[in-house]
Amino acid sequence: MPVETRYEQGVLVIGLKGELDHHAVEQIRDRIEQQLEEHGYRGLVMSFRNIDFMDSSGLGLILGRYRTVMEHGGKMALCEVSAPLRRLFEMSGLLKILPVYESEEAAMAAILGA
Image 1 (tube, rainbow, N blue to C red):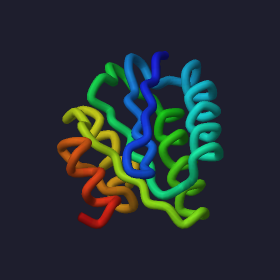
Image 2: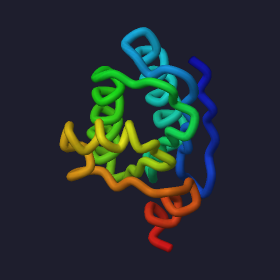
Image 3: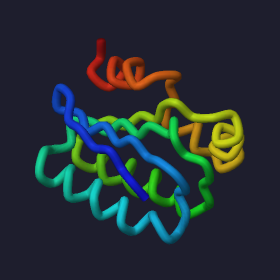
Image 4: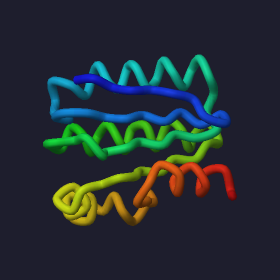
């Protein structure tokens, strides 16, 4: 699964593409963890704009990164979530702990306190 990563104002922005299932999660998790270790934990934004499918292992990926970022004093936000994924996030309780924004810009602004 292709993953786009970039740093903007100290925040790691992850653009996920394709299917977020148990086959892809381990590789993505390792890449995110490596990027956070190299650049710090100010914040993490995960964009779901190009996700076609996600199973429960995707929820585990999100919650695990949330825990890691929070333990290091950072903030995390999700953005560009489709209606089907939003329903999955609602049913799982994820929306009670993580904010979801319409755009990367809005998620960045929330993390940076703008």
